[in-house]
Image 1 (tube, one colour):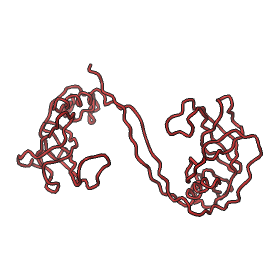
Image 2 (cartoon, helix red, strand yellow):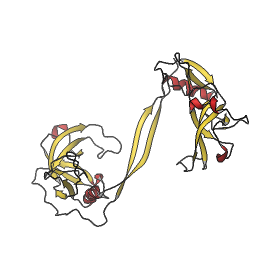
Image 3 (cartoon, rainbow, N blue to C red):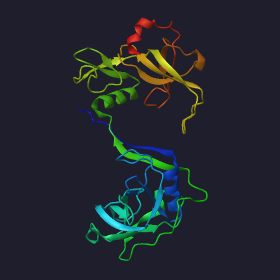
Image 4 (cartoon, rainbow, N blue to C red):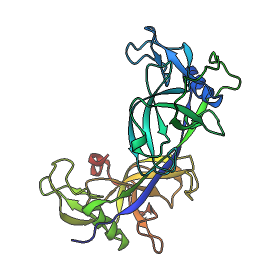
Length: 313
């Protein structure tokens, strides 16, 4: 069996979130070294605060300050910190119930080792030097054997409140396309398109999936399709993507290659974007050294009849 492909892949994007009055006050408070919770109708104090009671679903707006000291309720040791985590040396993830709160806050606990951590231990917040109104304004928790910290007397109102946050979301992983798609990718390197036929319904799937999505049985018979095909549906892209050297507007389409029973997607070129249409006959355009077609262009053939591709919409 040929070697299955694999490669590292990173998915990364900035996640932007606007804040309501409760979360705005909480994060602005952290910037000012103040921890705020919210009180429920039955007198509980929730930290971190939420906008709706998780038990009764009541709307919550009554903010109350709690101390920067607290008690560990449970913990787990992180022996190998990852990129972007609060500390670069081994630490404990801990749930800490701050003095005055009825729920626990999850954060990092800086300790010399797992033997130094236990449920019930007293801790306090170590504030970050530079604070901007984010959970990272709490650098971590640290062991503490003193009295509960005094409150600042905040009512939850601050000048220049934080109204939104931007967090970098990132996922690092190794992607493997599997046996069927490895064969598909390798065939593209030879400028051929290969799908797999279901032994039951006889449909040819491109790209192949290793199993028929209709019948649920494995597929193994390889079938070369195309290279020409028919545009089944399409969209006009008007927003330029980052790091993509294609001028807008352009057309991205589903294309049913001749002999295939599943449409694949690709860019359409060689024709004004407003002349692309369903039924347009197209062929691949390759560039030197490319492992897949750069785009598809019109063949000059008459458009396909709707009945020839309606089942592939």
